[in-house]
Image (cartoon, rainbow, N blue to C red; front, top):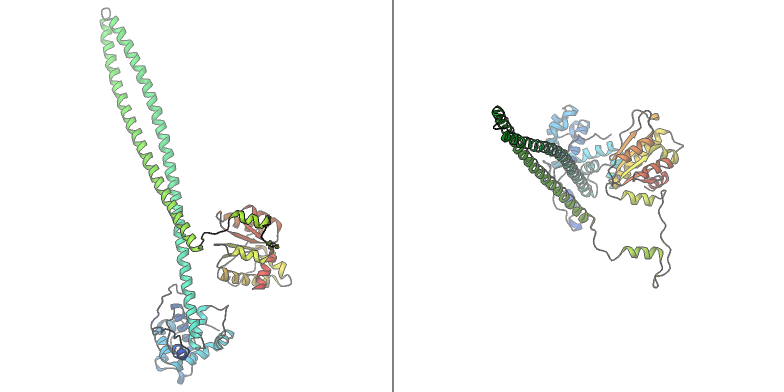
Length: 469
């Protein structure tokens, strides 16, 4: 039984205390010398080597154990690799005989995997880190290539995580930009409503001013006519005129304040519109850069073929063209079409679990059906790098299921919901434009997901794809 390696997110290039990697010779005469040199082990491989050695250390006879590691062998199992890792790594690098003894025990504990590595046979389904650790201890022919392959796999996982993080940050920035634009629109709407209200009040004040002015003119006219006859009324008229003048000044002051408020609102609207334009420009610039990067990645260049050529080849006969038979169109049960869809970037494969297993392996128990399907989907996820989701009806869910392979998501529908409804909800939740492939021979499921832009494929296409793998 192999001892699991402790989780570690770090993947440095050089891991002390192993010596520096020597360059592999190009000539066949120096191949043995190159394979006897100590390589640079990735951190995960180094930790796995130390963990395997620490687990096997107590099983060595006392006379075969180096003196420096006898104290380490008495440590508790969970502390042996952590506290004695430096001494173990140094002894493995300096003592070939000790490494050979540990390598034989590790190969024996690993079972078929250890036997295959000792014979120098490639193991495609095993973890690269486990293969590299056993190859470093056993040292079969070509073990340098196994260690180098593990380093490439670790770096590839780190690059994939960096790309995913960049995509996540870009989506967050786009979401924040949409939020800011929505807030700006709401504020602009509020300012427009406030401006309309101020304009309405300004119109009312102007109407009141005109009414007051007319009343003042009428009062002055009556005052001139009644000056000689009504001296007392003259004083009252003068007082009324003073009051009217005071009200007029107040109205003019309100009018000036309203105009200043309107001017500020217009300026704020201009500033808001300018900010919206800046955010929109930034979003367009980001999209443009993303499109340029995608064009460089896909290496799409000019072509001599034109759309009219495609129509001519498919529906017309050229004078100089020989007779030929057109290629067979791929349909929903053709694994070639499934391969074409899985090759699309960022594709999401959604599988109707029991619809596939009962069609392909109905003679098995449900538990073995699920296990066989999930294992096969793990191989597809590893080969394509696509997102894979397998959906089962929850009514027959069993507890204690084994963990799903890397890249495969296993879902069970909730009580009162079928797997078909859960699949349609998954498809509706995907962003518009992302390729989603739904594998199910249920006509209702296929028609439902097709209306939402997904690609329905029959269960036979996946079964043929799995059998071919």
